[in-house]
Amino acid sequence: MASWGEIENVAPLEQLARRARELFQAHVHLTIATLRADGSPRISGLEAKFIEEDLWFGSMPGSRKGTDLARDPRFALHSGSIDPPGWQGDAKLSGIAEEIVDPGRKEEIFRAMGAADVAVDSLLFRADVREVAVTRLTEAGDELTIDFWNESAGVRSITRK
Image (tube, rainbow, N blue to C red; front, side, top):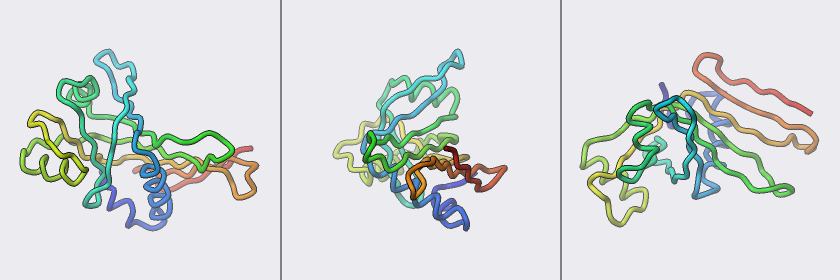
């Protein structure tokens, strides 16, 4: 299990983590995948922020993604991207969503995320990161490179035409 700060501070992972963070911060709206009760995937929009060396995201009270994560905390997150020719790559990560239930801590993080008002029943999650991937074009722009890390295999990279 890893906090975002732990990932950014582990060589040779730090460059991959830094690029992934840039891509996640490039867009306000991200896409999260959760698992429905029947095991099928659900995608939803959300906002996420890096605060205190962790990646945080919230959910409105009664939302389907919050219900999904309460039942099965596994998730995947996509950074979003722009269309070619300006495409700079995209980032993905997956992990376990740790729900934060302490009211004081929730308010502290939500305020750090920019929330003016914090609903008492809003859900807050810290990402326990298990896998990170960045997809990008090579410098020549004629091949696709995927740099990725997971707990069991470490950092790897593959390039495809």
